[in-house]
Image (tube, rainbow, N blue to C red; front, side, top):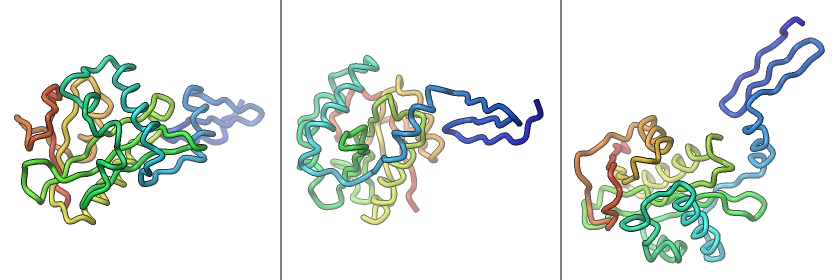
Length: 196
């Protein structure tokens, strides 16, 4: 068989042959139909129960520490209210009425007014590895710039290798110690990025 074309993307690889089409990475193929109707939008009060469930389920699924993390934050049960304040925003990833993830920006507690924090960035397994995390982070960083922040800080757990890689690809640099007063003593990686 003669190969006519090789179309490659981060979502799917398709090799087209004269009389044959072979599709590889079948686990990602299932995600394509889901991604056709994915929206990233600001959180509403009605989204609270679903995003709380997403956040808590990611911690359980990945066997992450529950104490000293977003898992036990009181605001995890009331995300809309937690981000309904100046210079704060939380985005949810939604498909066919189902919330599949989210992330937000708030001023970093007990620190310079020029620094915000990227917070509670979690997505369900079914949309990981499809570029949704990047789009979600882009929305947050664009909002941070529009709010006038000069730097963006984040804390994460070392076991979240893909997330740490995403942050590094987006020019977040590791710090030796935490900033502000987030209350997340179980996050072992602290990072910061210039927003200019």
